[in-house]
Length: 294
DNA sequence: AAACCAACCAACCGCGTTCTC
DNA sequence: TGAGAACGCGGTTGGTTGGTT
Image (cartoon, rainbow, N blue to C red; front, side, top):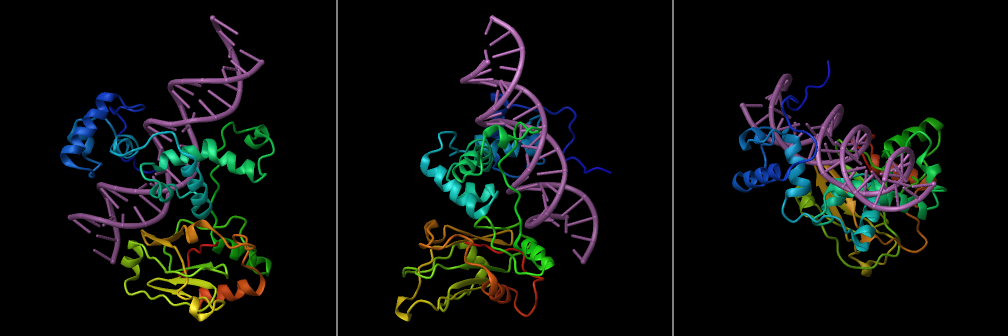
């Protein structure tokens, strides 16, 4: 028993879209709006799968789409966001107006991924990196959860090591707590909360006491006990995304990390145990699905 | 000029999540 | 509350293009 196809394949056009099909789709959506993709092809008179219509609209026909010519600034932003978010192409695309997840994914897999690997010394030779069996290996890396890391470490009988990348996350089922280590010497200012946080966290509160930011939906605590009292409130430029029950941090301190602090390098030994205890709480880790590391 | 190869990218596919009844 | 439909996402495929031999 295989999965039921989203629509019957017989009698449907496949492959590249013709300009006539594009015209039909655009004029239909302009008249009736987006949505109801399943029945759209029939209603619009297109011999296409609904999914295909949606993809075509979102990636190419939608107004405001930018194509090609990815600027240096955009490139840098993609790299930074990818470091933070991993292969979360739609989230990354959400921070690049006019760019689509598909374009960014393709750009990463064909261009940026190599560039990043090369710069980090991970790419010795192109041919070597490409591998003998796979001509075109995407540069997307599988994501790991901290739970995975912790579980492996637990099995080894020692605390998990800091992740290699600055962020380890999975496709979250539900995120109730997220932690990040604050560089000790943070400048002063304010905490900014995105719309989604307000939605999810309603009457959240922010206070400063120590160097760990712990987010427990629906509350937010910012602790910073290494700063003198008059340096508060601390400056955290956070975008908090609650998307389908998950949460992520974007652009902390505009991507800057204090001197001497390596991303992901703050955790280790007892410090990590403390953090785990802080995160997991007395209730254990049943409801913890992802952490963000910086 | 032809054959080959690598890169690019549009489109497809399957899965997980959310919505609706 | 459960089932099925709809939607959205990320991974993969395959056609096209441009460069090299």
